Length: 233
Image (tube, rainbow, N blue to C red; front, top):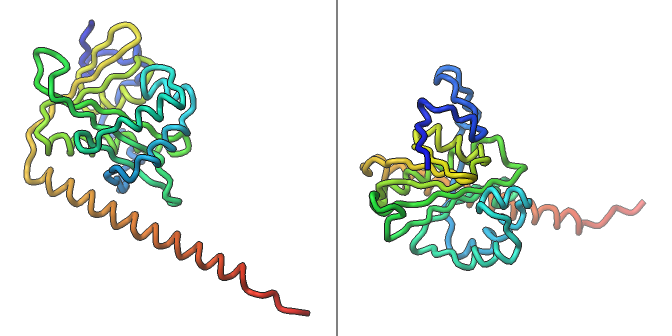
């Protein structure tokens, strides 16, 4: 297995373009994105989200070709008490992006303490908006608040989008055949990380509540208009 440092390694072998200097980076995703914590009540929505992924997107997300039944089994096995899941909803309150932080009680490698694995999926129509980056940043915040030492990503070497997120955040990349792994050492939590996570969660819930009320109001208004009698000539 070869170790790669994104700061001095050609990431082209992963399909990842080198990062431009900070002053030249375009940040189209600088705007705030409401990220909601997902729980048991969202299990069906998570399933619908994953089932919308095409064959290639499923393979990149899970590392292998994945059938509908396998996705349903994965969703059924989600442990919302142990792990953390977060999502981004669109204006129609459809789940367009999901991140999964899978915590492990035992280390994945003998020389490392227990860590958390990060996985993310974004529907094609919601891409190129920086949602993967934002979900990764939020995942790092949440993992730090749970006193996690390292964050781990397992992806196919051809999954350039995922590896680019890891490289941009300073992760150490490793590859072995078709598989790539990224390791990101996490600093300790602070008062700021806890306050920040709480603010993000509260703002996202308020945003969703407002959007839901607007959707209900719009639906009600359309029904009222549809029931109005047409004036006779």
